[in-house]
Length: 168
Image (cartoon, rainbow, N blue to C red):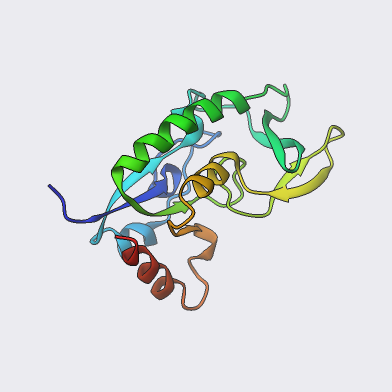
């Protein structure tokens, strides 16, 4: 059995081809800096809740305090599918002792902050967190979370690694 801590990571950041366009957003620095110390738990909410690869791009729409996960062109609502999956996944993660999570920035499901929420006329009306990220942070408020956009900020690695290991 591994004595490494558990680090949840958006699967696309680990090089898995799970994005809406069939691609990935590999961040080699995750494996280089953290790989020796952690067991990765790759997560792609869209794929795990049953959406295909490739898939129509999505965005958050509706009320900023309770947005819907909608496809852009056909306006198919995937909110319930995502919420149903998320409730189950949160129970699984609670048993895995996750010490930190690295989310994909700018994602309507995984973005931590500044995710545009659109109104009925396709104009941004607010900002918020992605559906999955919001649910994870509500369920695990003390687990350190970051997105890959933070990686190159001064002092990031020292701060993140310290917080990650302090939750062990």
